[in-house]
Length: 611
Image 1: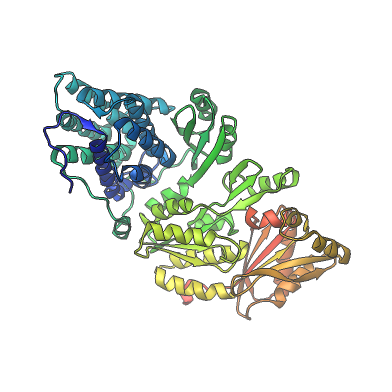
Image 2: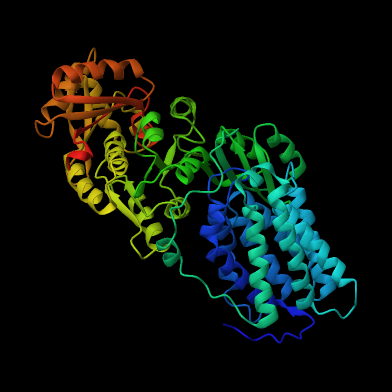
């Protein structure tokens, strides 16, 4: 508890306001699970509490020590941090609200009743202006009610104490919150108030408690929160989504015209929020193709911090799945879309760069688009591992809806993806709720390990027994990459030019293989260029791990017919094959292999029920 403020104080300086805001943010984090449960608008995906917590937490570093902070400078820093950290619809609105509060507090050393009311009113205006189609019964209604009540109380008397008018306005905000239950049909049917609006009221309650009584809400232990998070279903029912991806990005530029940006984006999706200033704008919008958003944004400035969450999958997780753990992997794993959806596998995208343009793998750019751009781009593409923040956001959402999370990573011998996932899991919780396992594979081999983990979840296995099963199955899972054209590997610097010349001269095709310890190396060659597929099928068959029934996953880079023929050849060469899937090859290996490449993942077919 902190009791440095006398309840009789008339004004609030930067120090006291910072502590009060910190207290309010801590209270929102404590309410994260409850906010997720009542999240039914605009999409019932159960992540409003998580998004608000992540968004507001981005300012806690600034608020950790406010003893020498001037009010106006503090608010500028807070607004900037919130803009950078904004997540989701409510997070973006909250960031823009504080941008307005900051702009109205320019040159102020303290808030009086009148200046605070004016700042909150400006924040309310900014928040409304950020929304393409504002609706009553949302966080906007409650912010507006709070601002109106503050103004009414502040005008009653020039020496009205700020702590008193905040308490009075908070009562009005709570009444407005209760009213949201009847203002939107989706809230009335679910019998809940708006989650974003509730988050705003919770924050003000935490601030008011400190300002009135000196009781600061202590910073909660995120690990403890996740460990105690309930797996209860989100309120309401699953609904058809008009658009699938919750898409965000940051734009840095000079004199960004947010009106024109809003007009350009409003026709491709809904739930559009544009927060920020002329120099930096945060975009949040629901669309079917995130790539369209990034393409439009690039015409207004430099685009960064791209994010796209699959709301359909999140909604499914919030409402239906009662598995003992969630399964997540990175997009280096090549898995068919049908398996991802049927087995509820979550995916963190790698990042792809073509010159100065960035994309989210398999979300902002499809495999077909990637290989076409690879063929025509004057600059070779590069890929980079997801940032720890990309993992952390997904981990936190899943950990708030499942008892545990298992992350299946690209082999740690070829990328830092495993380390990024482990770092995110360690920062998120020390309770072991998020478990990261090295697949010891790449591409379709990694995909088979992730699919097996998801099958264990559907079979009702717990995380401990699944980890043991994965540690065994990964040692018997192999990946084989047939690189038809070494030009892209040479262009990207992965293979010396002379190796391609030798392969071309000898008319052989190199094959990359995964090893039991997770290394990816040259495993041999297939002779003949006229029809090398039968030779590749025999190559794989000779290296089959064991004689038990097998499952096969084939990835192709714009050569589906070749993949189907290879499937037939493998079934002839390996009688033990019981199950085969075909999918498009992604960019993680495709950046080095190019169009025409084929990958085979081979794994013992061991249904979890047999364990």
